[in-house]
Image 1 (cartoon, rainbow, N blue to C red):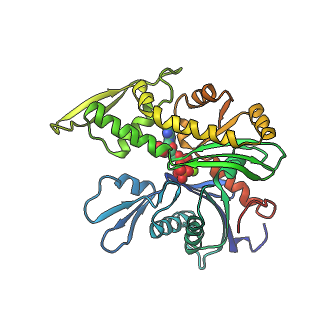
Image 2: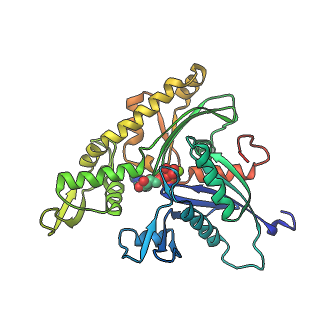
Image 3: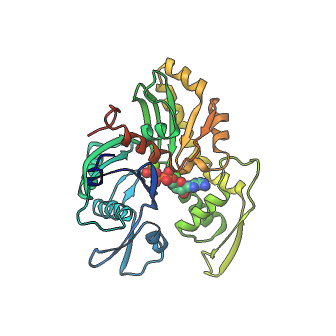
Length: 340
Ligand SMILES: Nc1ncnc2c1ncn2[C@@H]1O[C@H](COP(=O)(O)OP(=O)(O)OP(=O)(O)O)[C@@H](O)[C@H]1O
Ligand SMILES: [Mg+2]
């Protein structure tokens, strides 16, 4: 580190639909839900991250909670900028006399349009980024998993996030073929919410639906180490009286089946486009799963059985993209796939 290193601060950001993670000096320094709460009339920021999430679905008319990203891309530019700015502030707890020059690497979905890329770059710059590099998310995921993306060998990653599932084949430091679909963790949560309404006549919010998914979510109707039923409380749709319903993982496996099939179809379509030499490498190595959505019980087994190629879950699926973005930050002079 040079004597002027305090003048520049280097950070890597995984700006996700569900969670935003910031890496600084190889450490995760921010890991918060991508959500802000603002005063409805003045637009002033009230809370960001976990604090704002606790208000989500519980607000009165003066407070509005906003999730600035939808389907992996910025949907509310203003809120996104406030969120990035606020999260960067969380690192710099001691206010200095001057703020350091910020160098940052931010990841973007591989299916982003030019306008969407522009939005990420602009909000990063508005939030204080002086030197902004962008990297495609599947590339970051592969690096975070520890794959050698520059080798003359194919590798395949499937990142099931909150808003999008990104599937990509990578070789020689570039994305050879890819697909991004808008079926991912948040879609699974919506499936659970509507299943509870139709099947059990119970009205539940997004957070409860996500709790059900995390506690008894499954991709197969029969799994090893099955979780105990999860008891859900809420109002009956007709009577508004409180009811208690135990939910089993088999039911949730059934309710998620359609959405998981969409992920399978998308993976198969990328395999179809894959050049044969790279295909052979992928069959030999297996396919790597990242993103929070990949934590669904039995998912690697279901995909392996369906596609006949082994699927491996990343060691830390929720942080693979962020860690890879952090590695890219340290190698920004060397990695040609970083975009300025
Ligand atoms: N144990 C779990 N089982 C099932 N789903 C989970 C689990 N833990 C987290 N999730 C889901 O993972 C999703 C968030 O994953 P992740 O943080 O990778 O998304 P993101 O990067 O914010 O979104 P995107 O990449 O689409 O912009 C949420 O939908 C969350 O409900
Ligand atoms: Mg992500």
